[in-house]
Length: 181
Image (cartoon, rainbow, N blue to C red; front, side, top):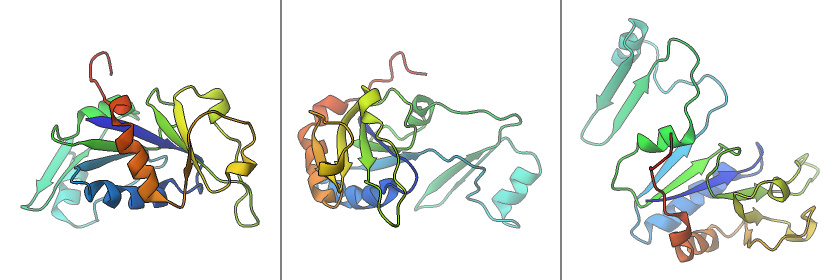
């Protein structure tokens, strides 16, 4: 499987880009999974539902499945931060691409999503000057990048071109579980 991270600050457009890159990869016949980092407490379950009731009763894990989907919920008694590599190990083996959103500090090869400051977006410093794992920058304002770079510049508004670049450079993103925990 191939793994690529998409890193950038909140509001830069990571989720929007991924929701457009996913179908572009799927149209090429590729199976795509996503690993997403959540900063806050979140829940995918709803109060009163069976699985919620099982978790509230103290179940460590609840797996719920139908003929269309499977979900695993795991409760940690103490705060525990999974590494991106631990999360990748949880995925189905038959996936072609894993797009990782967040985990900007990880040692995965990443595409930085960067937007210039505007009236609606305060902007943030670029990460690529100090992160050797960033292999490309997806931006809507290449002329405003704060530091010149030799890395590929991808048009944030052209998700099909981003998907094509990923596929064309696929060998670079081959992932190995060896020595990763």
